[in-house]
Length: 222
Image (tube, rainbow, N blue to C red; front, side):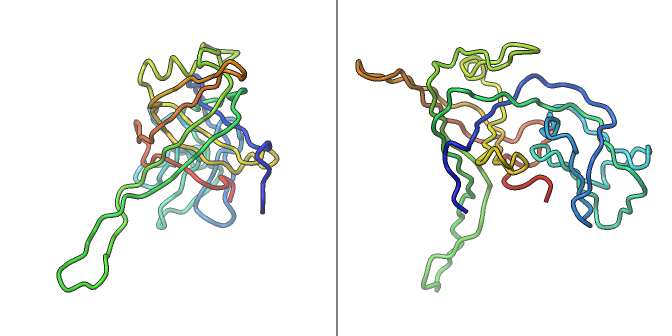
C-alpha cells in the first residue's frame, strides 16, 4: 500500500535508561515475546539483558535477543511457564524534527562462487549491512533531548559514537519501523542566497555491544 512521505518520522537514540522486570507480550503462538511498552523497545546493546519466566531467571543459552525490536525468542526446546519479563536498559528515541528527506538501505555483500566450467556468474550472500542519508533543515547543533541530557547530531558525529537511526514510514502504525545501529559518516551543509541552509547526513551500519545484527525491518508485534 502506498504511503505518503509526510507520514514518516525519523529518530535517533537518547540516554540509556534502566528498566526492571518489564512486561512482554507473546507474538501469536510463537516463542517470541516483545516488550509491551513501545517506548522501551529499543534495548541498549551495551547492557546485559536478563529474562525471567514466572520470576525465575532463564539461562541465556535458552533465548536470543533482538535489541532493535525489543524481542526475546526462546529456543525450540524451551517451554515457557508463565509471565516473561525483561530487565535491561532501553534507549528512548528522539525525533529529528527538521528532517525532510531520508534514505534507508539494507544489503548483503555478494560473494562470487563461480568456478571453471560454469556458464554464468554464481553468488552467495555474504555479510549484512545498512546505510543511508538524512536531509534536514538544522545544522546539527540542535539539542534533540529535552530531558535527561544533551544529544546533538554534531556531537554524535564528533565523538564517533554509534547511535540508533529509526525510520517510521507511517506514524499511524508505530509498531512498524526500520532501524539501524549506525555510526555517522558525514554531515554536509549547503545553501544558496535564495534558499534555506540544508544539511545532509550519511551513516553506515555497525553491530555494537551485545547486538547480533545491524538492522531491523518490520512489525515488532508480528
